[in-house]
Length: 418
Length: 97
Image (cartoon, rainbow over all chains, first blue to last red; front, side, top):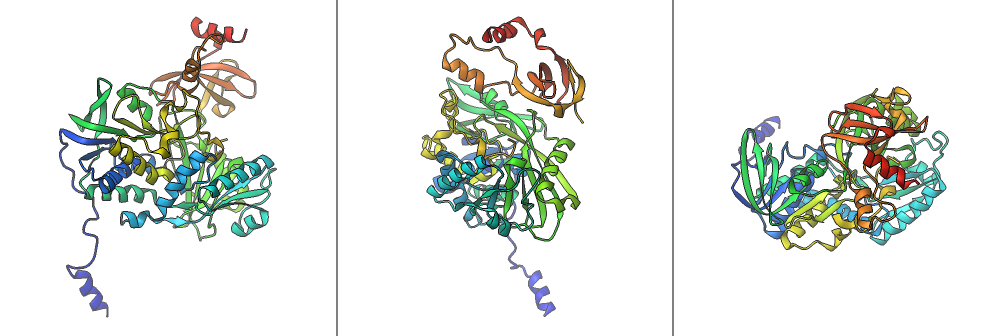
């Protein structure tokens, strides 16, 4: 028996994945139909949908660091659509739907795990808001209910129902909530895009955006010490965290302020926590990964900064609150802490669509809600690039909504910082 | 611990303070059009250099100005709002007449 296995393993037909790696890098061409600035989840997702569903493959994705090395590597991998506004819920629900089948879509295991997300209400006003969110979510096909303390105890037996002076009164139980392996999402999209002819250029920084007569004509890039000019028909900026800096090169401003967002994870322990649990009142959310580690996420840093350093202050604040909800976790050892850079908008909704520069499209303002939007963002931005028309789904997120006081206020349903 | 040198209270833990946004002149309260108010409200400095910012010491209720580098987080200077340049100071004072 063991000899058969050995023989099988040494066989040339042993079915390991032949094309697991990305294609070897090639030299930059002088022109592409589409240049996507930013090789994170959003950038490569856009390239993937362009290549697979629109047949547009003369595309270059330019990433100044490594594939998915920015915020795609630094989020807490939550997938949910339990937002507040119709525009928001409609948008995020589409993303939740796409995530369900994403591993099959691009034939790469993203370790999608449907756990359900439970948001806790510690006040009457929170219950009222949750009731509205449950109804809006159901209206757009979601699986979300307002539940009481008894059901919460059954879902999360380890939860402290009377933390501090704010007992748990009710919960928003969003069964569509899930997690996935965030790196794998970027890798799957990148593999699918590059296999279809899209070029991914890492360690390639865009140093300038060339605009002639109000239209984008190309970009200047730096690879090592070499500088190149690339002409393009259409450009997309997908560099959330640094959106303002890139937009400045293209000659316009964005209503964004950049804040660090920290998260941390403990040693692995036996599985005891199925759902993702979030408490806005305690400014924290807690989930257990497939490997058994406990991930803690919380609110943004208290002031803007272009720096992905982690702080002791946030460890203390976040964990003090988390330990109120799960007291026994005080004994766990913290393993790792990291930080992403978030484009914060004043209404906690993204900025997608047209910019003041013709053929230069925006995928920005992703704050603390970017990872969950990866598939629908890629699909929508690809549609915009391919057709030149802003899809209905993302029209509410136009950059000029602020000047026209048409904000899409998702503050209550996004981050845990308030 | 990060220290913020408060002009009134001296060096304190930055957790005692709240960030209050960029210091900019206020539009003319009486006559500014909506577009100018939108610009003032929604667009602010978000670069990688030194920013001039409002900060609030919460325990003492004191507002002041800090000049802080947005990449290194170095606090270069802090001062009382009365030391702001005339154009900024006047716009703020007139707004609250």
